[in-house]
Amino acid sequence: MTAIPDSLRRVIEPWTVFEPFDTISATRGRAGDLDPAKWMGYAFNPDANITPTANHVRPATIPTCRAGITSPVYTPDNFLICDNTSSLPSSLMMACIIQEYGVDGIMYRRPADWSGRTLVIEVDVDVWANGVLGTYVNLNITNEPVPATTPGILQNQEPGARSDKAVLIQFSGGDETRNTVGAVLTYDGFTKTEVTPSFSVSGTDRLLVAHDNYNHLQIRMSTTNLQVWGSDYSTDGGRTFPNFRKIYDAPLALTFTRGYIHIQIRNHSTTKFDLQQGDSGQPDMDNTGIYHFRNFRFNGRLMPVPRAYEIPHNTTTGHNSSPPVGEDEYDYRRMGYQVSDGSGRAEGIWNAADSPANISPLTFTGSVNISGITTATLTLNVFVNAISNTATTSWGLKYKFNGGTWRTRTLTAAEVSMLNTDLGSAGNLALAIDVPVGDVASGTNTIDFSTVSVPMDFAPVVSNIDLLVAA
Image (cartoon, rainbow, N blue to C red):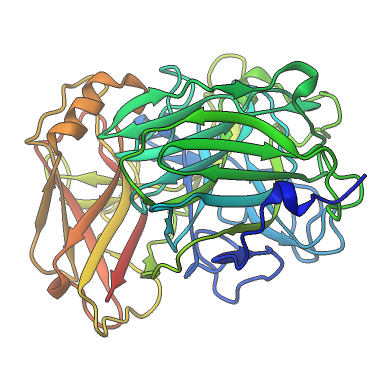
């Protein structure tokens, strides 16, 4: 077993970003143990938006990570830095048990730039998979800093918010012993293209993978080409990586050269199909997908990073005593917030359909620093019922900062077309909204939501909400 030679890794230091995932942030946010100034954390359950529980998540059963952490955990406590009490110390452990085709993920807030060059991204991860019906890793690059965007191979494979422009790489081409790249998709103006590789591997040429044993992955991407390289799993805790080789090569035709890198764990229906209980090598973790990450890095120009302020997840808990046929009852925690336009109940933000009170407004964490800012951006996920209704450009999200003026962001023609023709979007959007700088105050900031012309038969839902300000 040998280390990866420089001739294969490429000598590309200095890295623009290097994150070993070995330090617990003193400030916690939606990314759990990770620094919220560097990382956006998100969790998303598209099917749960059409229930009274408003984008809910189940508790994740996890192995030992470090002292003081007890299982099970709800997001964001599923993003944990583990120490030497765990199976893989000094790593980021991500746990996912979102039954209804959901995603847990993190996005690095500093954008990557590949104008006129090749972007190289590396990460170590135990990159096993349960196939497209189970749990697997996605690595995505989106042109906007928006949360929880998802590819869509089939209508019901990865429902959720689509990206305006993106590259989405699924590591779903295998199982718990061998894995490789599954599908690769690009988006341009919300138009999806499934990339056809010029080179790929299958069978025993796929990477050898094993739970709790790192593989080394490397992405090489330009506007015209994508390569994925990987190693078999390390047997010495990630000091060396055997058989590092190219596993995927494909032409691209990207129209964007700057974007944001996301690391995601996807769940399709692990509880429904019971794919993890009693499988080879994976302990029964009550259907929780467990992955370990370390040594994330990418190269290129040093780009500015905005100052970020979050709305925390909703933390209301509940119990589903009437689950789908064949499934057990389960506890849950809401992550999203329902929105009313004032018809039927008071305008503003509600905990959920069964909540007895309006909870407007929501408060961003931290004291907002507006010194020198020239731009302000609101990013979030929004659900609208385009499943049983036809979306139009008259539909809009209303918001106001600090009790001030209502602003309306109506849907674009491209977003409407996507909602009405891409059924896998399931009515979900990932929005980056330009906010008038004067609406943002120094210090504490609040936000309220309403809608315009959006159907209320299934209440709109907002979640994974951030305010970004930049000079």
